[in-house]
Amino acid sequence: MPKAYAYTRNGGPETEAFIERDRPRPGPGQLLVAVRAAGVNPVDWKLRNGFRRPGAPEPELPAVFGSEVAGVVAELGPGVTGFAVGDAVFGNPVAGGYAEYTLLPVPVAAHKPAGLSFADAATLPVAGATAYDGVRQLDLPAGATLLVTGVGGGVGVAVAQIARAFGIKVVGTASEGKKEFVEALGAVHVPSAGDGLAERVRAAAPDGVDAVFDLVGGEVLETVAALVDDRTKLITAADPPTAARLGGSPVRRARTAAVLDEVARLVVGGELRPFVTATFPLERAPEALRAVEDGHARGKVVIEVAP
Image (cartoon, rainbow, N blue to C red; front, side, top):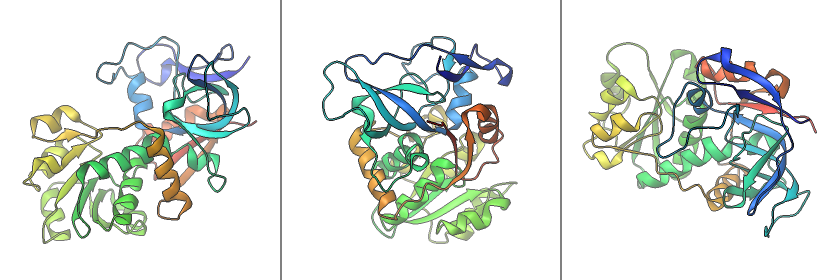
């Protein structure tokens, strides 16, 4: 039977286990996909810990990890058009991504361009699309300055590159150990550790910042919010309650195939590099998740599934 990696109850890593499950059956408007790669994101372990998106139902346990995949269409659900068995696709699964097979709803599934690897494609439905949606939401003109907190992670790496593709200057906070990595993105690095963060940002951007794209939340978000007067230019993908209290807002996700097509175009065109810095086979999914949960990963971590 097909294998998958799941959590069996809310809690820590001790709740995780490999499971065997029947091959999913695609319903109307769904694709059955043989997974070739799955992106690993902080939300994966946060869901295991009990986090729920607004309006989301309680998961059916065991719940398979993963919310972005790339793979090959193995079966079409009733009424599906525009796709065929054998097509290479990527998108947001409804049945988890750390698995040999999963289901993709057609509205959030896109054809993978030939010039895009499965591993790179698997980083786009969450990290790449969140970055794209947020940069579009901020609607900054060319020449504006954007502060990105947590710029060294998967979403931050995409934000920095997409913003620069739109002619926006980027200042990013990250640990000292990620300085060279951040500068390689074309961003100005600001050390994230220790007191005086606001002062360090002001020194790096003496003309001020026009917007904040937060990927950290908490005290960091509280601190950097004071750097932007127009709170419509304060968005977060990490801490919506704090952002709302400060007059900001969460990243508004479009969750459409059109956005997936656009971020794929940016990758193929050389304007966006996914920066997959570590890959693990499905059998080592626990290590992949720990790499992200520990907070030390640079760029994106991907789980690869053998055909």
